[in-house]
Length: 454
Image (cartoon, rainbow, N blue to C red; front, side):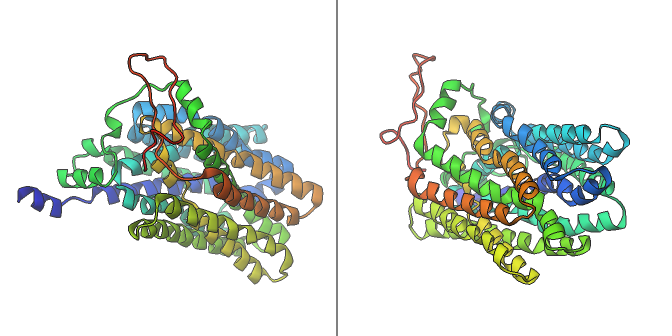
Protein backbone atom coordinates (compact mmCIF):
# COMPACT_ATOMS: atom_id res chain seq x y z
CA UNK A 1 0.00 0.00 0.00
CA UNK A 2 2.83 2.36 0.85
CA UNK A 3 4.44 1.63 -2.49
CA UNK A 4 1.16 2.23 -4.30
CA UNK A 5 0.74 5.54 -2.52
CA UNK A 6 4.25 6.55 -3.40
CA UNK A 7 3.57 5.65 -7.05
CA UNK A 8 0.48 7.81 -7.03
CA UNK A 9 2.40 10.70 -5.49
CA UNK A 10 5.52 10.40 -7.60
CA UNK A 11 7.46 13.59 -8.14
CA UNK A 12 7.63 15.32 -11.54
CA UNK A 13 11.21 16.55 -11.41
CA UNK A 14 11.79 15.33 -14.98
CA UNK A 15 9.60 18.16 -16.28
CA UNK A 16 11.65 20.80 -14.44
CA UNK A 17 14.79 19.24 -15.94
CA UNK A 18 13.12 19.37 -19.37
CA UNK A 19 12.28 23.06 -18.87
CA UNK A 20 15.93 23.84 -18.10
CA UNK A 21 17.08 21.80 -21.11
CA UNK A 22 14.66 23.85 -23.20
CA UNK A 23 16.01 27.16 -21.88
CA UNK A 24 19.65 26.10 -22.31
CA UNK A 25 18.96 24.95 -25.87
CA UNK A 26 17.12 28.19 -26.59
CA UNK A 27 20.18 30.24 -25.73
CA UNK A 28 22.37 27.74 -27.51
CA UNK A 29 20.55 28.85 -30.67
CA UNK A 30 20.20 32.51 -29.70
CA UNK A 31 23.99 32.69 -29.44
CA UNK A 32 24.38 30.97 -32.81
CA UNK A 33 21.88 33.36 -34.43
CA UNK A 34 23.43 36.59 -33.11
CA UNK A 35 25.75 36.82 -36.11
CA UNK A 36 22.94 36.34 -38.63
CA UNK A 37 21.10 39.37 -37.22
CA UNK A 38 24.27 41.47 -37.04
CA UNK A 39 25.57 40.28 -40.42
CA UNK A 40 24.12 42.99 -42.65
CA UNK A 41 25.43 45.81 -40.43
CA UNK A 42 28.82 44.15 -40.09
CA UNK A 43 29.06 43.64 -43.86
CA UNK A 44 28.43 47.34 -44.37
CA UNK A 45 30.85 48.46 -41.64
CA UNK A 46 33.71 46.11 -42.47
CA UNK A 47 33.17 45.52 -46.20
CA UNK A 48 32.69 41.75 -45.96
CA UNK A 49 31.47 40.15 -49.21
CA UNK A 50 29.12 37.13 -49.36
CA UNK A 51 31.89 34.53 -49.31
CA UNK A 52 33.69 36.22 -46.41
CA UNK A 53 30.43 36.31 -44.47
CA UNK A 54 29.84 32.67 -45.34
CA UNK A 55 33.24 31.82 -43.87
CA UNK A 56 32.37 33.71 -40.68
CA UNK A 57 29.06 31.83 -40.45
CA UNK A 58 30.83 28.48 -40.99
CA UNK A 59 33.56 29.04 -38.35
CA UNK A 60 31.23 27.76 -35.66
CA UNK A 61 30.44 24.68 -37.73
CA UNK A 62 34.07 23.67 -38.30
CA UNK A 63 34.78 23.42 -34.57
CA UNK A 64 31.33 22.20 -33.53
CA UNK A 65 31.47 19.35 -36.03
CA UNK A 66 35.08 18.35 -35.34
CA UNK A 67 34.46 18.21 -31.58
CA UNK A 68 31.38 16.00 -31.61
CA UNK A 69 33.12 12.69 -30.93
CA UNK A 70 35.57 14.15 -28.36
CA UNK A 71 32.63 16.04 -26.83
CA UNK A 72 30.62 12.83 -26.60
CA UNK A 73 33.57 11.09 -24.92
CA UNK A 74 33.88 13.91 -22.37
CA UNK A 75 30.13 13.66 -21.77
CA UNK A 76 30.29 9.90 -21.15
CA UNK A 77 33.31 10.44 -18.88
CA UNK A 78 32.16 13.38 -16.73
CA UNK A 79 28.36 13.51 -17.08
CA UNK A 80 25.84 15.95 -18.52
CA UNK A 81 25.47 18.29 -15.54
CA UNK A 82 29.08 19.43 -15.30
CA UNK A 83 29.97 19.39 -19.00
CA UNK A 84 26.79 21.18 -20.10
CA UNK A 85 26.87 23.78 -17.32
CA UNK A 86 30.49 24.76 -17.86
CA UNK A 87 29.99 24.74 -21.64
CA UNK A 88 26.98 27.06 -21.36
CA UNK A 89 28.91 29.61 -19.33
CA UNK A 90 31.92 29.41 -21.64
CA UNK A 91 30.07 29.76 -24.96
CA UNK A 92 28.04 32.66 -23.54
CA UNK A 93 31.23 34.46 -22.55
CA UNK A 94 32.62 33.92 -26.06
CA UNK A 95 29.39 35.36 -27.48
CA UNK A 96 29.84 38.52 -25.43
CA UNK A 97 33.41 38.85 -26.68
CA UNK A 98 32.20 38.94 -30.30
CA UNK A 99 30.81 42.38 -29.54
CA UNK A 100 34.41 43.59 -29.15
CA UNK A 101 35.84 42.51 -32.53
CA UNK A 102 35.58 46.05 -33.90
CA UNK A 103 38.29 47.29 -31.54
CA UNK A 104 41.03 45.20 -33.18
CA UNK A 105 42.50 45.68 -36.65
CA UNK A 106 42.15 41.97 -37.55
CA UNK A 107 38.35 42.02 -37.19
CA UNK A 108 37.54 39.04 -39.41
CA UNK A 109 40.19 36.81 -37.81
CA UNK A 110 38.95 37.72 -34.32
CA UNK A 111 35.35 37.02 -35.30
CA UNK A 112 36.30 33.71 -36.94
CA UNK A 113 38.34 32.63 -33.90
CA UNK A 114 35.58 33.47 -31.39
CA UNK A 115 32.94 31.66 -33.45
CA UNK A 116 35.31 28.69 -33.75
CA UNK A 117 35.88 28.56 -29.98
CA UNK A 118 32.14 28.90 -29.40
CA UNK A 119 31.64 25.81 -31.57
CA UNK A 120 34.02 23.85 -29.32
CA UNK A 121 32.17 24.93 -26.17
CA UNK A 122 28.75 24.04 -27.62
CA UNK A 123 29.81 20.64 -28.99
CA UNK A 124 28.51 18.45 -26.10
CA UNK A 125 25.16 20.27 -25.78
CA UNK A 126 22.89 18.14 -27.96
CA UNK A 127 24.43 14.79 -27.02
CA UNK A 128 23.85 15.93 -23.42
CA UNK A 129 20.21 16.76 -24.22
CA UNK A 130 19.74 13.28 -25.68
CA UNK A 131 21.51 11.62 -22.76
CA UNK A 132 19.42 13.49 -20.19
CA UNK A 133 16.10 12.66 -21.88
CA UNK A 134 17.04 8.96 -22.03
CA UNK A 135 17.89 9.06 -18.32
CA UNK A 136 14.86 11.09 -17.20
CA UNK A 137 12.02 9.95 -19.51
CA UNK A 138 10.35 6.61 -20.30
CA UNK A 139 10.12 5.60 -23.96
CA UNK A 140 6.48 6.62 -24.38
CA UNK A 141 7.29 10.22 -23.29
CA UNK A 142 10.66 10.50 -25.02
CA UNK A 143 9.50 11.80 -28.41
CA UNK A 144 7.58 14.57 -26.66
CA UNK A 145 10.60 15.41 -24.48
CA UNK A 146 12.86 15.40 -27.53
CA UNK A 147 10.44 17.60 -29.47
CA UNK A 148 10.49 20.11 -26.61
CA UNK A 149 14.24 20.65 -26.63
CA UNK A 150 14.39 20.38 -30.42
CA UNK A 151 11.68 23.04 -30.68
CA UNK A 152 13.87 25.42 -28.69
CA UNK A 153 15.72 26.28 -31.90
CA UNK A 154 12.49 27.58 -33.44
CA UNK A 155 11.45 29.27 -30.21
CA UNK A 156 14.83 31.04 -30.11
CA UNK A 157 14.38 32.38 -33.63
CA UNK A 158 10.69 33.25 -33.18
CA UNK A 159 11.00 35.12 -29.91
CA UNK A 160 14.52 36.50 -29.97
CA UNK A 161 15.01 37.46 -33.62
CA UNK A 162 12.58 40.40 -33.14
CA UNK A 163 14.32 41.22 -29.83
CA UNK A 164 17.76 41.21 -31.45
CA UNK A 165 16.65 43.27 -34.45
CA UNK A 166 15.14 45.83 -32.06
CA UNK A 167 18.42 45.94 -30.10
CA UNK A 168 20.26 46.44 -33.40
CA UNK A 169 17.91 49.24 -34.43
CA UNK A 170 17.84 50.97 -31.03
CA UNK A 171 21.47 50.47 -30.03
CA UNK A 172 24.12 48.69 -32.11
CA UNK A 173 25.16 45.32 -33.46
CA UNK A 174 27.62 45.01 -30.56
CA UNK A 175 24.77 45.18 -28.03
CA UNK A 176 23.23 42.01 -29.50
CA UNK A 177 26.27 39.96 -28.47
CA UNK A 178 26.52 41.55 -24.99
CA UNK A 179 22.86 40.88 -24.19
CA UNK A 180 22.69 37.29 -25.47
CA UNK A 181 25.94 36.26 -23.79
CA UNK A 182 25.04 37.83 -20.45
CA UNK A 183 21.74 35.97 -20.17
CA UNK A 184 23.46 32.71 -21.06
CA UNK A 185 26.02 33.07 -18.27
CA UNK A 186 23.25 33.54 -15.69
CA UNK A 187 21.44 30.47 -17.03
CA UNK A 188 24.64 28.42 -16.79
CA UNK A 189 24.95 29.17 -13.08
CA UNK A 190 21.31 28.10 -12.52
CA UNK A 191 21.99 24.88 -14.47
CA UNK A 192 24.97 23.91 -12.30
CA UNK A 193 22.95 24.59 -9.15
CA UNK A 194 19.83 22.55 -10.03
CA UNK A 195 20.48 19.89 -12.69
CA UNK A 196 21.63 16.44 -11.57
CA UNK A 197 21.29 12.90 -12.85
CA UNK A 198 18.16 11.08 -11.58
CA UNK A 199 19.74 8.98 -8.82
CA UNK A 200 21.61 11.99 -7.45
CA UNK A 201 18.84 14.60 -7.56
CA UNK A 202 17.54 15.49 -4.10
CA UNK A 203 14.08 16.41 -5.39
CA UNK A 204 13.18 13.09 -7.05
CA UNK A 205 11.48 10.27 -5.15
CA UNK A 206 11.57 6.51 -5.69
CA UNK A 207 8.14 6.55 -7.32
CA UNK A 208 9.35 8.72 -10.18
CA UNK A 209 12.56 6.69 -10.55
CA UNK A 210 10.54 3.44 -10.73
CA UNK A 211 8.17 4.97 -13.29
CA UNK A 212 11.06 6.10 -15.51
CA UNK A 213 12.85 2.74 -15.31
CA UNK A 214 9.72 0.62 -15.81
CA UNK A 215 8.91 2.61 -18.96
CA UNK A 216 12.29 2.05 -20.60
CA UNK A 217 14.18 5.07 -19.23
CA UNK A 218 17.73 4.62 -17.95
CA UNK A 219 18.09 6.51 -14.65
CA UNK A 220 21.20 4.47 -13.79
CA UNK A 221 23.04 5.24 -17.01
CA UNK A 222 25.16 7.96 -15.44
CA UNK A 223 26.29 5.81 -12.50
CA UNK A 224 29.08 4.04 -14.38
CA UNK A 225 31.69 5.77 -16.55
CA UNK A 226 32.58 3.30 -19.30
CA UNK A 227 35.86 3.31 -21.18
CA UNK A 228 35.32 3.99 -24.87
CA UNK A 229 36.95 1.70 -27.43
CA UNK A 230 37.54 3.09 -30.93
CA UNK A 231 36.57 -0.31 -32.29
CA UNK A 232 33.10 0.38 -30.87
CA UNK A 233 32.97 3.63 -32.80
CA UNK A 234 34.02 1.81 -35.97
CA UNK A 235 31.27 -0.76 -35.50
CA UNK A 236 28.72 1.99 -34.94
CA UNK A 237 29.54 4.06 -38.04
CA UNK A 238 29.54 0.98 -40.29
CA UNK A 239 25.99 0.01 -39.34
CA UNK A 240 23.55 0.54 -42.24
CA UNK A 241 20.73 1.85 -40.05
CA UNK A 242 23.00 4.42 -38.46
CA UNK A 243 24.42 5.52 -41.83
CA UNK A 244 20.90 6.25 -43.08
CA UNK A 245 20.11 8.19 -39.91
CA UNK A 246 23.30 10.23 -40.30
CA UNK A 247 22.42 11.17 -43.89
CA UNK A 248 18.91 12.15 -42.87
CA UNK A 249 20.19 14.36 -40.07
CA UNK A 250 22.58 16.16 -42.41
CA UNK A 251 19.63 16.97 -44.64
CA UNK A 252 17.44 18.21 -41.77
CA UNK A 253 20.27 20.32 -40.37
CA UNK A 254 20.85 21.90 -43.80
CA UNK A 255 17.37 23.45 -43.58
CA UNK A 256 18.06 24.68 -40.04
CA UNK A 257 21.30 26.40 -41.04
CA UNK A 258 19.72 28.26 -43.92
CA UNK A 259 17.31 29.84 -41.45
CA UNK A 260 20.05 30.36 -38.84
CA UNK A 261 22.46 32.14 -41.18
CA UNK A 262 21.24 33.48 -44.53
CA UNK A 263 17.48 33.87 -44.02
CA UNK A 264 17.56 37.43 -42.57
CA UNK A 265 19.98 38.48 -45.34
CA UNK A 266 17.66 36.87 -47.91
CA UNK A 267 14.76 38.97 -46.62
CA UNK A 268 16.88 42.14 -46.57
CA UNK A 269 18.66 41.79 -49.90
CA UNK A 270 16.46 39.54 -52.07
CA UNK A 271 13.08 40.78 -50.81
CA UNK A 272 14.07 44.37 -49.95
CA UNK A 273 12.63 44.45 -46.42
CA UNK A 274 13.72 46.86 -43.67
CA UNK A 275 15.63 45.52 -40.67
CA UNK A 276 12.65 45.97 -38.32
CA UNK A 277 10.32 44.23 -40.75
CA UNK A 278 12.84 41.39 -41.09
CA UNK A 279 12.79 40.95 -37.32
CA UNK A 280 9.02 40.52 -37.32
CA UNK A 281 8.69 38.55 -40.54
CA UNK A 282 11.55 36.14 -39.77
CA UNK A 283 9.75 35.15 -36.57
CA UNK A 284 6.74 33.72 -38.46
CA UNK A 285 8.46 30.65 -40.01
CA UNK A 286 10.22 30.10 -36.68
CA UNK A 287 6.88 30.04 -34.83
CA UNK A 288 5.62 27.52 -37.39
CA UNK A 289 8.76 25.44 -36.89
CA UNK A 290 8.16 25.47 -33.13
CA UNK A 291 4.57 24.27 -33.59
CA UNK A 292 5.71 21.67 -36.10
CA UNK A 293 8.31 20.36 -33.66
CA UNK A 294 5.69 19.89 -30.95
CA UNK A 295 3.30 18.29 -33.43
CA UNK A 296 5.94 15.83 -34.62
CA UNK A 297 6.77 14.66 -31.11
CA UNK A 298 3.12 14.33 -30.09
CA UNK A 299 2.32 12.51 -33.36
CA UNK A 300 5.12 10.00 -32.84
CA UNK A 301 4.19 9.25 -29.21
CA UNK A 302 0.51 8.98 -30.18
CA UNK A 303 1.38 6.37 -32.81
CA UNK A 304 3.33 4.37 -30.23
CA UNK A 305 0.38 4.44 -27.81
CA UNK A 306 -1.92 3.32 -30.63
CA UNK A 307 0.18 0.20 -31.17
CA UNK A 308 2.29 1.22 -34.17
CA UNK A 309 5.84 -0.11 -34.23
CA UNK A 310 8.72 2.06 -33.11
CA UNK A 311 9.93 2.14 -36.71
CA UNK A 312 6.64 3.47 -38.07
CA UNK A 313 6.07 5.90 -35.21
CA UNK A 314 9.50 7.51 -35.52
CA UNK A 315 10.14 7.38 -39.27
CA UNK A 316 6.74 8.54 -40.56
CA UNK A 317 6.91 12.12 -39.17
CA UNK A 318 10.52 12.47 -40.36
CA UNK A 319 9.79 11.35 -43.93
CA UNK A 320 6.64 13.46 -44.20
CA UNK A 321 8.45 16.47 -42.76
CA UNK A 322 11.39 16.24 -45.16
CA UNK A 323 9.12 15.80 -48.18
CA UNK A 324 7.12 18.92 -47.36
CA UNK A 325 10.26 20.90 -46.46
CA UNK A 326 11.33 20.63 -50.10
CA UNK A 327 8.48 23.02 -50.99
CA UNK A 328 10.84 25.85 -50.01
CA UNK A 329 11.77 26.09 -53.72
CA UNK A 330 8.30 27.53 -54.42
CA UNK A 331 9.53 30.84 -52.92
CA UNK A 332 11.34 31.39 -56.24
CA UNK A 333 8.03 31.50 -58.11
CA UNK A 334 5.84 33.77 -55.97
CA UNK A 335 6.28 37.55 -56.30
CA UNK A 336 4.37 38.55 -53.17
CA UNK A 337 6.26 38.81 -49.88
CA UNK A 338 3.20 37.41 -48.13
CA UNK A 339 3.30 34.21 -50.18
CA UNK A 340 7.07 33.93 -49.71
CA UNK A 341 6.57 33.89 -45.96
CA UNK A 342 3.77 31.35 -46.33
CA UNK A 343 6.09 29.07 -48.31
CA UNK A 344 8.91 29.49 -45.79
CA UNK A 345 6.50 28.85 -42.91
CA UNK A 346 5.21 25.62 -44.46
CA UNK A 347 8.77 24.43 -45.09
CA UNK A 348 9.90 25.21 -41.54
CA UNK A 349 6.72 23.72 -40.00
CA UNK A 350 7.38 20.51 -41.94
CA UNK A 351 11.03 20.51 -40.90
CA UNK A 352 9.88 20.80 -37.27
CA UNK A 353 7.61 17.77 -37.69
CA UNK A 354 10.55 15.75 -38.99
CA UNK A 355 13.01 16.85 -36.34
CA UNK A 356 13.00 13.60 -34.36
CA UNK A 357 16.54 12.46 -35.11
CA UNK A 358 17.70 12.86 -31.52
CA UNK A 359 14.78 10.78 -30.32
CA UNK A 360 15.83 7.98 -32.67
CA UNK A 361 19.42 8.19 -31.42
CA UNK A 362 18.13 7.72 -27.87
CA UNK A 363 16.03 4.78 -29.02
CA UNK A 364 18.72 2.86 -30.93
CA UNK A 365 22.17 3.79 -29.56
CA UNK A 366 24.13 1.25 -27.50
CA UNK A 367 23.61 2.30 -23.91
CA UNK A 368 27.34 1.89 -23.10
CA UNK A 369 28.35 4.66 -25.53
CA UNK A 370 25.29 6.89 -25.64
CA UNK A 371 27.34 10.11 -25.53
CA UNK A 372 29.75 9.05 -28.27
CA UNK A 373 26.87 7.79 -30.43
CA UNK A 374 25.14 11.15 -30.06
CA UNK A 375 28.40 12.87 -30.89
CA UNK A 376 28.82 10.94 -34.14
CA UNK A 377 25.21 11.63 -35.07
CA UNK A 378 25.60 15.34 -34.38
CA UNK A 379 28.93 15.42 -36.24
CA UNK A 380 27.28 14.07 -39.39
CA UNK A 381 24.29 16.39 -39.05
CA UNK A 382 26.38 19.46 -38.42
CA UNK A 383 28.59 18.99 -41.41
CA UNK A 384 25.69 21.02 -42.79
CA UNK A 385 26.73 23.91 -40.52
CA UNK A 386 29.93 24.09 -42.57
CA UNK A 387 28.57 23.24 -46.01
CA UNK A 388 25.34 25.26 -45.99
CA UNK A 389 26.67 28.77 -45.18
CA UNK A 390 29.57 28.36 -47.60
CA UNK A 391 27.49 26.81 -50.39
CA UNK A 392 24.86 29.55 -50.18
CA UNK A 393 27.53 32.26 -49.96
CA UNK A 394 29.20 30.95 -53.14
CA UNK A 395 25.87 30.57 -54.95
CA UNK A 396 24.77 34.10 -54.05
CA UNK A 397 28.07 35.64 -55.12
CA UNK A 398 28.37 33.69 -58.38
CA UNK A 399 24.70 33.73 -59.41
CA UNK A 400 23.75 37.12 -57.97
CA UNK A 401 20.54 35.78 -56.40
CA UNK A 402 19.17 33.30 -53.88
CA UNK A 403 17.12 31.27 -56.41
CA UNK A 404 19.57 28.40 -56.82
CA UNK A 405 20.26 28.43 -53.08
CA UNK A 406 16.60 27.59 -52.37
CA UNK A 407 16.73 24.83 -54.99
CA UNK A 408 19.77 23.42 -53.18
CA UNK A 409 17.87 23.34 -49.87
CA UNK A 410 14.86 21.64 -51.48
CA UNK A 411 16.92 18.92 -53.16
CA UNK A 412 18.79 18.13 -49.94
CA UNK A 413 15.45 17.72 -48.12
CA UNK A 414 14.33 15.16 -50.70
CA UNK A 415 17.60 13.24 -50.29
CA UNK A 416 16.93 13.05 -46.54
CA UNK A 417 13.46 11.58 -47.07
CA UNK A 418 14.93 9.02 -49.49
CA UNK A 419 17.55 8.01 -46.93
CA UNK A 420 14.92 7.21 -44.30
CA UNK A 421 12.80 5.38 -46.87
CA UNK A 422 15.53 3.24 -48.43
CA UNK A 423 18.59 3.03 -46.17
CA UNK A 424 17.51 3.17 -42.52
CA UNK A 425 15.24 0.12 -42.37
CA UNK A 426 13.75 -1.13 -39.06
CA UNK A 427 14.78 0.70 -35.89
CA UNK A 428 16.40 -1.53 -33.25
CA UNK A 429 18.41 -0.90 -30.10
CA UNK A 430 21.97 -1.80 -31.02
CA UNK A 431 23.89 -3.92 -28.54
CA UNK A 432 27.65 -4.17 -28.17
CA UNK A 433 28.69 -7.77 -27.70
CA UNK A 434 32.15 -8.13 -26.18
CA UNK A 435 33.68 -11.24 -24.68
CA UNK A 436 34.70 -9.99 -21.24
CA UNK A 437 37.37 -12.69 -21.07
CA UNK A 438 39.05 -11.02 -24.06
CA UNK A 439 38.91 -7.30 -23.32
CA UNK A 440 40.62 -6.35 -26.58
CA UNK A 441 38.18 -8.31 -28.71
CA UNK A 442 36.41 -6.52 -31.53
CA UNK A 443 32.90 -5.43 -30.48
CA UNK A 444 30.01 -6.26 -32.79
CA UNK A 445 26.81 -4.37 -33.50
CA UNK A 446 24.65 -7.20 -34.83
CA UNK A 447 22.28 -6.50 -37.70
CA UNK A 448 19.73 -9.18 -36.82
CA UNK A 449 20.53 -11.73 -34.11
CA UNK A 450 21.36 -9.97 -30.86
CA UNK A 451 19.52 -6.72 -31.47
CA UNK A 452 16.82 -5.74 -29.06
CA UNK A 453 13.69 -3.85 -29.90
CA UNK A 454 14.02 -0.35 -28.47
